[in-house]
Length: 590
Image (cartoon, rainbow, N blue to C red; front, top):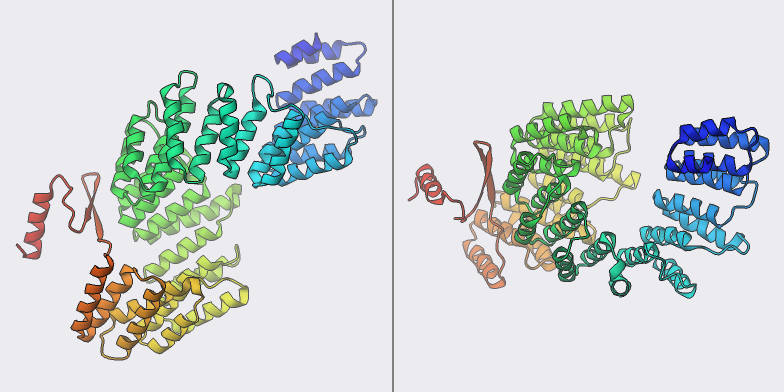
C-alpha cells in the first residue's frame, strides 16, 4: 500500500501511512525515500535517509535512491559525496546512477572517469544498458570515439544492440556516431532500426550530416521526414525544420533558407530566432529588421541571441531608434539580464554614437553584479573601451582600461581598444607601452594589433618605422599588417617615401594573397596620389585580368519604420527609377 501511494505521487498519504506504521522495515523506508527523491523533494528524502542511517537500517537501495535523486535534481556533487561515503559496496545500479548523474549534468570527463573506476575496482560488476547509455553520451560530449566504439562493441557482444521496444541504446549510438562525424556508422545503425527511430534519431542524423558539411544528404533525410510526419509532434517538426533552415544560412544559401522558413507548417520563437540570426550573419540587415517586425506581428519575442545579433546589425547601420525598441523589448520580456545581450546593448549604443546610452547600460550591469546578477566580464569592458576609442574619447578609454583591472584581467580585446584610442589621437609612445604590456603579460599580439600600430605610425608619417613593425609581424598577421601599411600610403600625399613603401607593402600583400581586392585598390590610390597614372592603369588592368573585383559599397536609410539598403549599381528596389532620378538631381549629374 505504501509503495503504491508513493509511486502514484500521493506523498502526503504515503507519509501518513508511514507514520502510522507500528513497525517499519527497509522496504517501507526505501519506498517513501524513493517517492520523495523521484519527485525532487530532496530535503524530505534526505531527512528520512539520515534517520534511517541512525537506525542502522540503510541498505544499498536506500543509498542508491538518494544518490539518484540528487543527481536527477542537478546536485551532482552532493550525490558524489554520498557515493564516496557509502558503507555497503555500490551495486551496478548505484554506479550507473552516479555515472548518469555526471553525464546528464554535463560533467562528461567525470562520467568517463567513474566508468573506468567501475571497470577497474568493482568486482564482478558488468555494465548494463543504462550504464552504457550514460557512457556513450559522455563520450559523444567529449569527442572520445575510441571509448565510444568500445562501448558499442561491448553492446554487440553482449546482445544489447536490439535493446527493447524503446531502443534507447540504439538511439544513443546514432547520436554518438553523428557527434563524432562518423555518419557511415550512424547511417548503418539508423537504417537497421529505422522502424523504431523517433524524431531524436532523425534530428541526430540530420544534424550530423550538417556538421560535416554534407548538406545534400541532410536535405534528403529532411524531405523524407517531412513527407510522412504523422507520428511526429509539431514541436518536433519545428526543431527539425529550424535545424535545416540554420544550415542553409550557414552555407550562405539565404534564398533556400527563406523558402524553407516560409514552408514551415508552424513557427515558434526559436524558428524566428534562426531566421533573424541567419539574415544578420549573411549581412542582410534590412531583411533582418523586416523579419524582426514579422516575428512581433506573429506574437513571438525572439530569443536572446537573436536580439543580440539584431542589436549588432542596428549598430552597423546606426539605427538607434530601432535599437531602443529592441532594448525596451528586452526589459519587458526579461532576457536583459543575459550578459551577452547586455554586452550587445553596450555595443549597439556605442556604435550608434550614443555613448551616454552605452555608459548607462554599462553602469547598470555593475549594479546588477553587486546584487548577485554577475559581474561585468571582459567583453563588457572591452566593448565600452572600444566605443570610447572609436569616437575620439581616447583619454576616457585609457582611464577605463586602468579601472577595468580592478575587476577583470585585460586581454587582447582590451589592448586593441587601447591601441585604437592611441591611433585616433596619434599617441605613438603610449601605443608602444601597450605593446610592451602585452608582451610582458603573455598576451598574443594579433593581426589587428599589428595593423592598428602600423596605421598609427603611417598616419604620423613614420613610414620607415611602420614598415619595420609590419615586417616583425607573425606570418598569420602579415596580410593585415602590410595591408594597413599600404592603406596609409594610399592616404598620404604622395610626395615622399610613401610611394616606394606602398609598392613594397603591395608586393608583400599580393605575394600572400594574389587576389586581395583591397590591396589592388589601395595601390591604385598610392599611384594616383603620386601622379603615376601609367602604373595606376596597369594595376587596374591587372585586376581585370585576374578577375579581381572590389566589393561594392552598401548604404542604409531608415524611412517610415523600414530599413532600405542600397548597393552601388543595384536596380532591384521597386522605386529604382525615382531613386536614381533624385540621385542625379543631388549630384548634378544626368
